[in-house]
Length: 464
Ligand code: 5AD
Ligand code: SF4
Image (cartoon, rainbow, N blue to C red; front, side, top):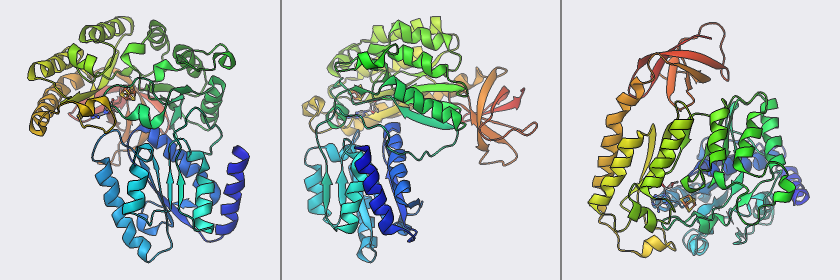
């Protein structure tokens, strides 16, 4: 595979050499998609394209789509419409990839409504992009490169990263959980874990290149190697998520380790122990709740109930000093009553989440929940506003608890509002601004004491 990819990269490069062609990528959706886009960027860079932020200037435009929630489609179709006008008077390649292209009927819909699209590629065929582009560019073919079969992991796709100090590393692909609202298992396929040696090599290379913060990515990271078909034999010692975390933390140069997303049902004690004993692991855990009501959770097929979720949080708070949580919540799941929604608010009050990603339920065709009787939009919106209000009422209280504490900050740059100040984030993702002391630079880790707490940021003073 790698040889074939390299061959097409060379062939495209030879054709466009000296023409100074540019690419533009629009990424929708989650960090896994962002990471895929870095690989798309990597392949395009090897082919000889350079990146532009303006799609009017691009010679190739790539859309990396997401289909987890509604309205991504409208956004995509709006953008394709804009591109159509440009393509009328410019030789331009338009390629669309990502999760949405794995949806039933989507390819034929695009073919019919937007016949000028040159390449359609799926999540399992991203590695073929050089070949797809070659066919579109040189042979003027309309390319469809989408398959349903998953199972293969493609190592060695070149990658061009967006950041110099923080990097994401995908550790597993796909999802086996089939939460009833979610389309991901249908478009991303079954769980496949990368070999730990490949992951550790990638992290080691990042450390050698000066990266300080690593985020391990997967649809369900804590079932790393725990699914059917995991190649435990070739994995050797590192045959679980906890062991992978320990091994990543041993890599010198890496100072902070994050992971998203774990599933509460797979949060085993060995993972909790690993978080407790490794200083490098950020002490904010993203623990998707989705709903606080046991009946709704059952209908969502989440495999835990309200009490089990709260018990897990209590156990982690007991074992890991200063641990905080962030979460995902869906409001307005089919059949959710006002009373059941109250349970969600109850859990929010009890856990005191540092950050909540709130979503209004949207039916996804092909998922079991889409067939159930739906709740009126206005009720969904009312619940959303109520949840938001509760969350925002807690922000001040949550920020105040940082006052006079010491926090490790990875310096990200100059503050947007005041270029005499530096900015960065705590372990727990809070934005902190502070004055430089000596010659601190972007990418340094410093310790600051928090001296002021504001609603959307904290102010600190460097200690060392
Ligand atoms: N409607 C609303 N939110 C959804 N999510 C997943 N599917 C849906 C849907 N159909 C949310 C979940 C998940 C996050 C990535 O997106 O909260 O954790
Ligand atoms: Fe979707 Fe559930 Fe899998 Fe997350 S765990 S990707 S919500 S099916």
